[in-house]
Amino acid sequence: MNLPDFSYLVDYQRSSLTMIASSLLIGIIIASTAMLYRQNFLGGIVRNIIKKKALSEDTALTLEELGYNPKNIFYKFAFRNNTPFEKTVHRTNEQPARYYIPEEIKAREEIRYRKKGNNIFGIIFVAVIFAAAALAALTIIPWFKDALSNIFS
Image (tube, rainbow, N blue to C red; front, side, top):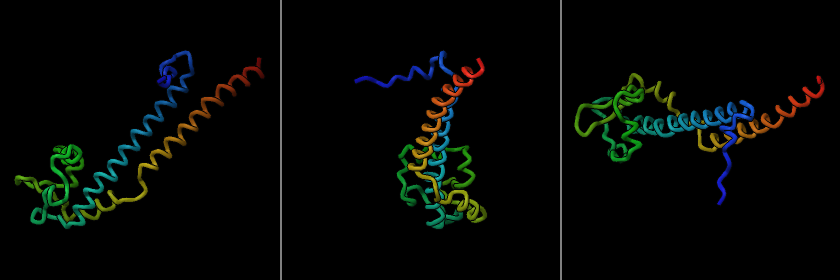
């Protein structure tokens, strides 16, 4: 089985345009994936807490009561200490920890984490469109540069 040749990524004989386009594509994919995680995973947690009306320390719920497995690495990562998400989803000092969203910030967080627009198909669509545009630019720009140098030489 022959693997794809990615030597063009480090081939300094080629234009730096290839490196710029590749870096932008990777950056777009990473940013889109982070946005998808925030809106769908963290947003799902926020929407679930609000739906179950855990809006104070008295009504706070454990991960099990929210329907989550506390041993799942994604939930451990989401509920770790000293994160911006901790300012949204508050934790009680009890064991096991119970989680809630204060009533005062509920409306703001509903808007911030509303479920709309972002899905995996959007990421794939953006990546394919950008890759096609980058490929077109990598093909057209050298051709255009050669054409201009032929005209003026």
